[in-house]
Length: 288
Image (cartoon, rainbow, N blue to C red):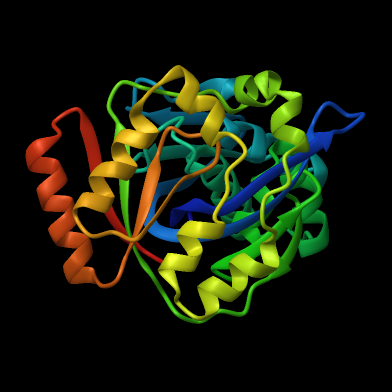
């Protein structure tokens, strides 16, 4: 096998609470991750040596700044492998939107290079390498669609909810948010606020109670971003007007997602928003 093609799914944070800053510079968090069927495509090809990364998206870095490059580099170094790999990334996940596209790409590279080059690396070690690359990367190696994430996001616990959900994702065009900068700017008042916890959110998800989800949902970054941009409330208001009962910002933003009751409702909401709000990119996706 000389070529391997993989899908790299996006993620949503159905709940995200930033707890405190750690000695290593990261923050401890508590979150509910969910993979969704909005995917990048990762193509891997053998090379005699060296790593090459190709991506036509203007906002995706090449070379050593790319998380996929870092993933391949760390894996080959750990395995003591002299072979190389060519990585082609076709982007569908919006960049710097709070959807974990770069982390998911990196996780797919880890899995793909291991398989392509037949490297004997245990899953436990693969997860350690993933955590070194980025806080969200281990989740994309996780077998389930949903998980509770703690620590800096790498301590994962399975969420046993089988019901799949439909989402309407709204991403303001031309607005990219740096996760690193958002963590650097997070204020003490945000860290000390005590929202409802993960357990009550999980009960709302289990019961498919969208009203409860909307009442108890929380994202530590949402209020921060709202002070700088007005898009969060604007999108939430637009979704509510169209009948969506639950909405939240994902990650450090700027993507805001609404939970639809069905595919039909999600498509209707998407069509209405796309027609009226040209400055928004609107995407329909389902649990992966």
